[in-house]
Amino acid sequence: MSRLVTPASIDAAPASARPLLEAVKKQIGSVPNLFRLVANSPAALEGYLGMSGALAKGSLPAPTRERIALAVAQINDCGYCLSAHSYMGKNLAKLSEAEIAANRHGSSLDPKADAAVRFAVKVVRERGHVSDADVQAVRMAGYDDAQIVEIVQHVALNTWTNYVNSVAQTEIDFPAAQALAA
Image (cartoon, rainbow, N blue to C red):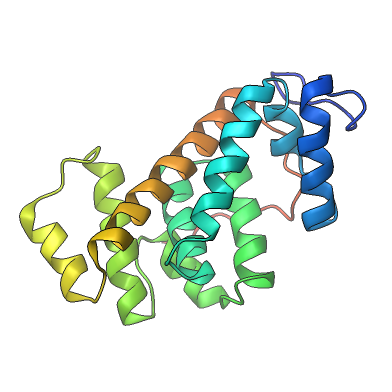
């Protein structure tokens, strides 16, 4: 059970959050618990949706974004986000089970995406204080400065959702991610 209130329906959410939740429902067909939980603060929901929407229009492909989300959620031990991104990675980004496992281990089977995931992991573990060599490695894999900024922004966004879900102990409404094999 969640430690913070998760409105049971769109109608139970604060009035100013309802149009935002309706838009989520229209876009993805349902309103996962994360969105209803964050709706407790319409300002936080608006900020989250705004950043998510803007990044979706960025230059990183959806599979790379999911790979980063999986790596960050694993480091931050967020069961909700691991479950959500394992589901979305498999069903929307078409990532294989082996790729999802690699992402959770902080890498990728795709050479270019591997550089992005490894860089994202460095950003999390070093709290942004990456080395010149770390930046050079992601550049050498073909990422430009705009994409490097987007990788960092995805780390920040996913860290925020990891923290919100961990604080709230959000009830998982996706197939639960399995424990990661060593």
